[in-house]
Image (cartoon, rainbow, N blue to C red; front, side):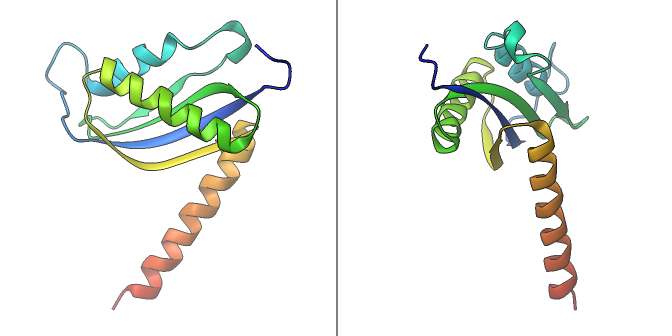
Length: 125
């Protein structure tokens, strides 16, 4: 791999359209298992996940190697597409973000949640 690539952190929030809470493993668990195949010692502690109990929503965080933020976004979307296919999961991407660190992604998520909350209060009757 070329040395100009750097490790980026991809954060994705997914709506799971075919939840499987009563099967042997949930869709969220299968997504995580498929993401583990992309992990290495250099990418620890990623991948990470949060799955809602009803298996209808998941948030996954995983690493990609890429030369730029937009290349990382494209690589992350490609990895996610492959992982969801392997996991037999139909998803709708709610939000996809890329950062150089988890701290950068947390800041982005906080700003987005604040904007959503302000929009909700401004449109409330």
